[in-house]
Image 1 (cartoon, rainbow, N blue to C red):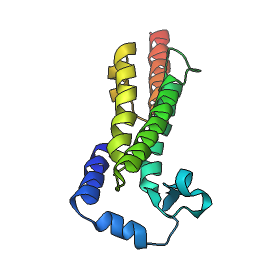
Image 2 (image 1 turned 30 degrees about the vertical axis):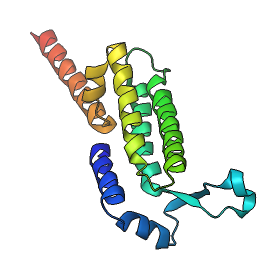
Image 3 (image 1 turned 180 degrees about the vertical axis):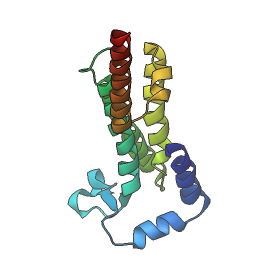
Length: 166
């Protein structure tokens, strides 16, 4: 999902003027607006940068999934290393986005900086910790896992009862 939105965001911001035009003219609570010239003009700032709701929500869902992965860890249930690394990477990606917007005085697709930061950091961390396979195989399906565990336990009880009757 992040990879697809990465390409989508880059195309619609750099390839056309549609995204910027719609974002500037659409008055709805789907964007955060913050002044780019606050330091120069103070409260009379007139040049604004925008951050779309998708630039917050989609990476946020991924970071929440990293927290669930942390909780599912068999090694250490209290560790939140993937969550914190993802959260810090997201913040650094936002800072880079704002710096690039400020430097080039042009619209930038935030996901261009957020996706590599949010994906690259936990993947690198998993590679260092030797948990890359577990990270890629992770499925957030607690109901299914719980039912499978119950079935296995019931199957073991049936097998144990069968052995006792023999």
